[in-house]
Image (cartoon, rainbow, N blue to C red; front, side):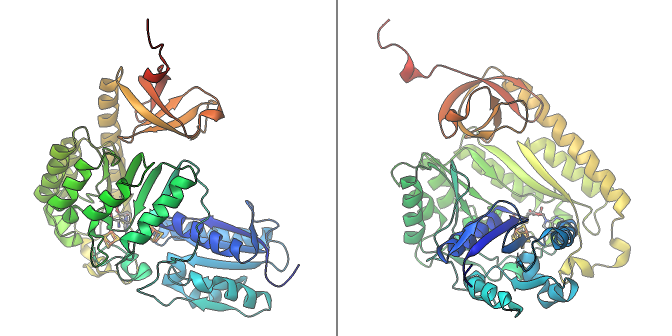
Length: 445
Ligand code: SAH
Ligand code: SF4
Ligand code: F3S
């Protein structure tokens, strides 16, 4: 084996932005002579692309690093990348003697040279922010064959008081519209027709000349794009222009992930979310008026410092009112250095209370989606076949309005668009029966 090259394994934690970063890293490393492998055991280079959003996410990585130590082959280089690498820096190397490379989200350009140095026994780190970095010259190595994640913005300029992301991903910056469009064209040329635009507050996208409305229209106009999604938008950045662009761009799907975080204006204020309960409702109403049938999904935090039972009740009533398609729910996790850790100790919500609220919230979300989904049986949807389902030998498909529909069929259907009838529901997902497509019916009867 030469000094460069060999095999590389990357394990990814955290959000889609991290998945997309892994695709960029792998693209760059494979073009530098590495071969990507799907297990750590015999890899020459093992990278863990980490998330720092909650303590639990970090503990999983610490555990995994311990496991790697006993599983990795002798002489392998172990690196930690992503948000935890940015947050902990050199402390990671102090804690874990077998980690010899630490690289934050803006330092992936340095990976090949840091890995080479590590092979010679020299540990190294790259954790500077670079407010220009978009890895424009990296060709991502995509693993999903039916939809493509395209980063359009890096970093975050909001300062939600609970959140570590601004300090792990640095200042907000947007890619040039022309670069995003070029990537979308390449994706279509590779046979992928669904695109998900990524950014921490993706609808605040602005490349100095174009806003998010321009971007949606431009990507939506790329020939061959059939579905266009984006995640995560911030409620305050849905300008009328953006909503009009969504409504008028055929490819934009009838689904918006709209993080609410809390249904209580008092808590929202302390979170520095910059909108009230009513402001959130108004945003949802504007989206629903412009995009009939739009499904909303959300993120909610319970147990934020100072959250009372009344505040929590407001979250429950907001969940009832909003009829979310899905809610991703979290217990507040204090992150070192964030403003939320500086609320008085007396305001901290005990783990017991937070767990109990989380359970009640999940129960409420599930009951609501079950009732709604039962009411949808008999309806039809166009679905894209995404992948084999985890159980039952079925296929997992997705509708434009973000419903998961399981269908019977063989793997040759993956990547195809079909019309299905929703015939059953488990509560959160559907069972569907494939309909004969109109084009397939005899022309004359
Ligand atoms: N930029 C995105 C969210 C990124 S983090 C946005 O603004 O919507 C994804 C989700 O993790 C957040 O929406 C929030 O619900 C949750 N989260 C972030 N920090 C958290 C913390 N300290 N404790 C618990 N959940 C948190
Ligand atoms: Fe975090 Fe708020 Fe930025 Fe989202 S908008 S990444 S929650 S600071
Ligand atoms: Fe985690 Fe970083 Fe994403 S903290 S949620 S991987 S931006």
